[in-house]
Picture (tube, rainbow, N blue to C red):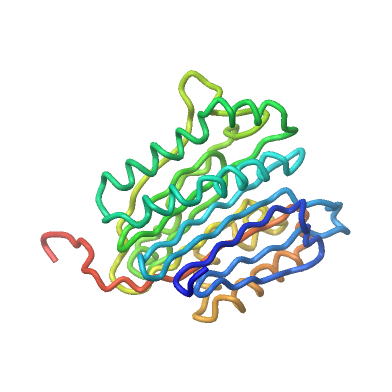
Length: 269
């Protein structure tokens, strides 16, 4: 492992963090986890996540997973991506063009649609939502199955009320019930350019927004809760949902990107 890159993955079956907030820092990337409140009935954590980055090549790659019934489906996806790590990292090392993101999408689809992986999924108990987010140079790319959430925070976007990148989709999963078993798999994919200046990436499972009293149902509340000290901000966000007696587990991946490239503006400005 060199100083420019680092790999991290976790599944809730390894350590569930019930009644326990944990903040893990990988260079500039923060992973926050809270397993939910035992006094609200929580006793397990079926979330999962994976983070890779390479400072020299100027990219981050993150997966966030929210499984149910068991965490087996999340475990299988983490294993799948760790097996294909070097191929995916090679794609991310290439020049930033539309073709690069097309090839990444094709690679991920081939992984999820492979006979071997589909066979593995038939033998797991439960299924998972899966959100994949890549930042390469001044672009973000995302691939989403299900209802995990990707926010991209920037003051220019916030001033227009734009915070959330992907649309949550219900009844969409990978695992025992599997969108990739269908004749036409259903998933969302997209590309967004970053605004000039500081862009804040914030990925979360839905425990955060489905907390009792809904402190973070409005994404503006998340945006305003994130000051420059990200680990303390995420700690206080997780403490807030703990204090509101959340049952569902919450996993957050967040990082900041300072984009020096000019962003598009209206022609009359």
